[in-house]
Image (cartoon, rainbow, N blue to C red; front, side):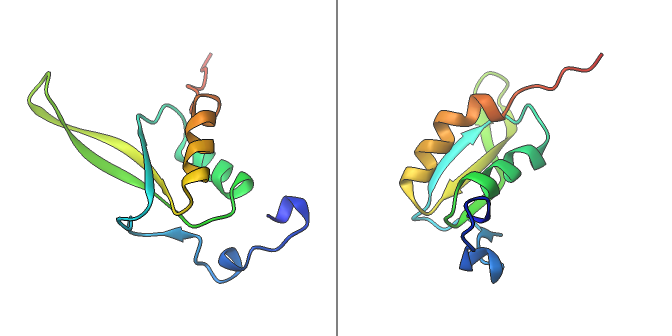
Length: 97
């Protein structure tokens, strides 16, 4: 991680963020309450492995429709656990006055 003085080879070669979600990645699904950039910036700054961030479509049994949620998936299960524990501090609704 660059903030610790280490260069991440995956980031240098543009291989950290994937455009598709591989089946072996561990996923965390959530409703986005803040800017998408706040979540991805936190991932870039605090984690070091490969990840996917994008939309997931789920069935809503209450309205018999489809809802769009966000999915963050990680190659390393420990990073998914850490992200899941920190999600409430990252994904906060921004106050507008």
